[in-house]
Image (cartoon, rainbow, N blue to C red; front, top):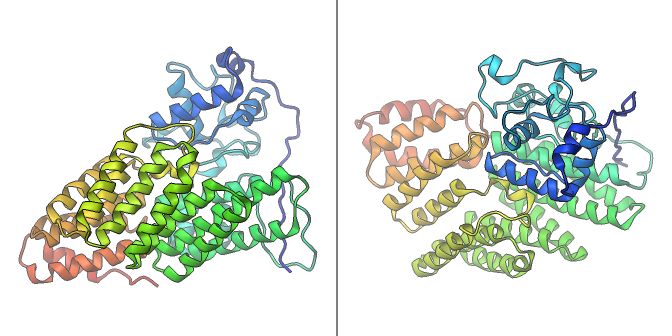
Length: 468
């Protein structure tokens, strides 16, 4: 029988309260201050899920030095101050971790890949940083390192086979599961699904075994169900993006069943959202429309305009697949109006990828499906220009969409240039979906070999290793 074990690092000395940080919070409650942190993160394109517990741990001194994502957010909130001014210890003093030069000293740009070993070993609540070591492991299939990446700092989900029964889960197991979901999403954002899918199956099995084992408190049971459902969706997306549509459908259905058993509307809306996207890609546009509309029915009471905007885009994609231009345009207009209402604290954490770039990219896909290549190219180009550098996979995706739209719209030289840009990103991104798009573009460009840059693109594309 498989078991899931969670181990945590414990500090060897009592923490020293961070009085400077507490003073900066002022009269605001920890929850109110956490909301300000999340809002500041969105302003600079960072992804943190700060809550009152995290603020409390900082003020109690349990988090001696924040990870790089939080550092950027805090310095944005309090311009002119240093980490020391905020009451944090230098990274070099965090015991058991090697110091690392600050990005400015190494010539790196903010948001560059940063190693795990610079983080506070006691900060197990949040870590959205990825290391070059992990990147290489995913690109080359390093299983042991990948397994480590799917557990959070100091919390590792271990799905190794043992003969011992699974113990009842507690809050640390639930936290480990939630962090595994974040890690998978982060790595997918940067590198695509192909190197991740098979390795993500073990944490998913472990998650459902935790559910079978039960938990000590109902709040923990609820967290485990939600975490397992979100993990099923994440693994389903990895299957989806790597062309394994049947596997993706199964994982999304599992998440939907989990949501309905527990009455989790947020999880159900997410599952329907991804089901709609999959149905569109699998050539079932009517199912895509129905799933997107179901997602909107269950998601409307959640209070997130951005969620409803994304769901309207999912519906638009279905209408485009049905060649219903009017239905598509109406859904696109609704998506744009909802998007313009802005962010809110009700926005689900998993929607961190959904910004103006994704809005433009999904609209480009709609116009492409409808055969309006010039309009599709305009939106795809804007999507690639707007995308945060963190989302490498999406930059490659939008640029591949642009290349295909330009090729089909009779602009082979521009298409070849965009295609070359995608090829330059494929040493960082593994996505069968992107490679399939490039292959389609190459076929369209074959009759245009004499156009500027086309022959070079075709030769380089031919030399690509084929997806497994």
